[in-house]
Image: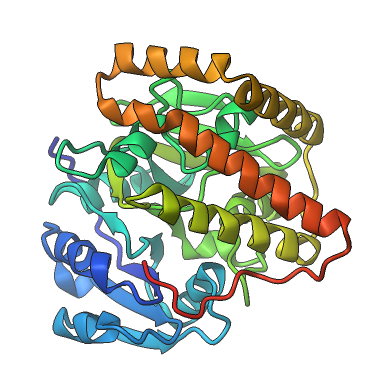
Length: 350
């Protein structure tokens, strides 16, 4: 779809990396292919000390800046890149993201013609037949963590529910995008990563240094905005996310997710919206029972195969079992009083 925004703002693309050579070429190729003026695109790589070809690849594509990410994590990398950015719009593109077509940036920028829109994000993950089964599975699921399915808090179209979220959100259909009204005192979907664009001005009163926590940024921005509300666009397009290719790799990333969450949970000091904690606890119980009894997972797998025929749905059970295992181990570590720390990034490969 050809979408031409009335104005073309300068965009700063923020890409955290750590030994990301396997996917970074594809990411930067897709950015280079955009039909958006190159002089209006600033590409900033925040590297956490890669020992592979990551920085060589970045220089080959003539990225504008390569800055160090001394704190290693992806959240710290986004913050480090944001500090160096000069664009009116900040775009969070991970090194394992691929922009699916040359008009993607223009479609994502078009909603900003509406002065009320403070951010935009794709409504789906793009599923490609050529991708590995694990990548196709998560694209169809619409999330990278199946626990989110049972909690009902996700932000991309899920083939199992045929919704992009189950969190109640006031929205208006504007043709190529949905205009959402997010309120600071209500639970918000997990918007904020993998192709997320936001106006720099929306961050003026938001604490994002030294860690840019995706799921908290919009809530904080809404809290500091006039009347405690913020308008966000969900653009009717997708983005490719090469999240992982094997179950072993998924397990490693889930362990990183759990360990990081438990470690940073006190630092984030996140204030839950009314009803959020109860929804989360109820979702965890549902997920645990569904995984242990298996039958609900089999029914979900069958529903997925009917709606989007793909043998990648066979991964639904092992992915849920792996997720339950990693969360259980993380919680048990915390309960036992074990020292909390992020998973080491030593020898990490994307």
